[in-house]
Image 1 (cartoon, rainbow, N blue to C red):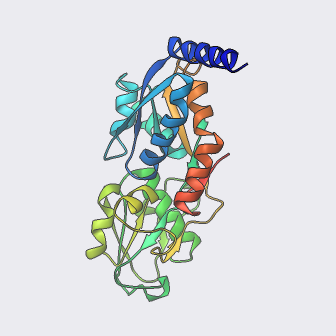
Image 2 (image 1 turned 30 degrees about the vertical axis):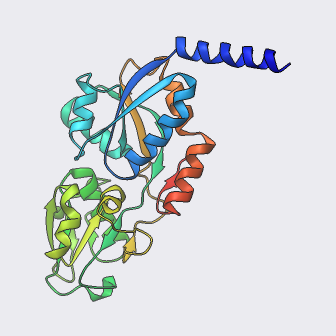
Length: 258
């Protein structure tokens, strides 16, 4: 019986090796990179070898995927992808959901939003979707009011009520943690907060609500949706092992979509 089990196991491993496929997946630093490394561990025994490639900004991973330098990427939410497709003409599609990372408000100067000074400086991401997301967070928290009809991509020009006459510093998302020295508050994506040593659960003075539409996704080139490696990639991401890793490591600051 032991010998038969050994033979079956060997045959299964041989079959997996024969079906082995190598893919490159682009990610941003922080939780997206850390989670994809765990996904790679789950996928490897099943014959899918994932090379995780980190990018320091939000623009290059879609360009690299569209150009064929990557097979997939996992770093962005739906509104960002939709805006990139609209602005840059990328032929990219979503094949699976991943995580939600509530945006946090951080400060080295105040402990509560009520302490925001008159004429205070607010640092937000400079890309339309994440900048708009930051403004929506401020509106939800009662700090500002935005013009109706701006959807998910308002800009500072759409601020209609600004009781404290706040000014907005639009910066590259990766630079926002450094802006804490100059701004009164900075509204930072979770991956860049974690990468800079900030803890969203303990360091954020306020956070985005749990009903955020900004679920993150796995993206591939249009036409690759049915590729043999796509389903195993999504299945590995949605595995119990990866879910447990996320829950244990991030303690609620990163929320799974499955």
